[in-house]
Image 1 (cartoon, rainbow, N blue to C red):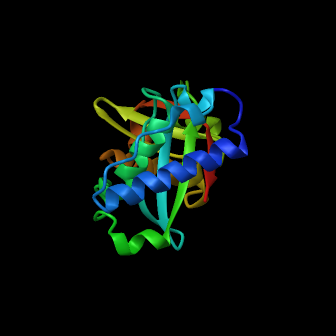
Image 2 (image 1 turned 60 degrees about the horizontal axis):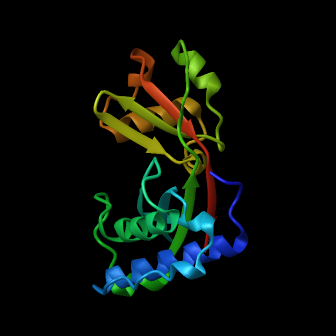
Image 3 (image 1 turned 90 degrees about the horizontal axis):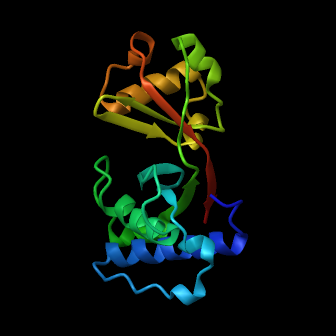
Length: 189
């Protein structure tokens, strides 16, 4: 991932996320991208999460942990998915659009976090810096670094991430899990 996006690149991604979300919620097709108006960085592979909130409350959040398409396409795809496909929420409706606030998180490539003991795992986590991916066999879940704001206690953070993965809350204490960390560049409307 290159250095940080410029403020103009961030504005472009937020505008395209909003346009994609609004078109999808209204049942309209996405307009084609004018690639000539986009910077090389926006056309490079990138992984993102798009988070939708209403009055500070989560309304949808979908993303990818690894880059598989141009960043600009990734953001548009996840804006639509956050509005219509997050299984935790009903699809966003047209009357809600005005009250939706969009946040985009551009992810670094996840790296393994090596640890020997549960206490060692807690010590290596960096609250408010690291996003965390837990994996146990075929189950996997992540929390973006922004989740530390609501779950600042490291053990509580991991307990909730285990629950999100569909596992017992304290599984990380009893079993050595595959742990990866990443950072994000977050920006919002």
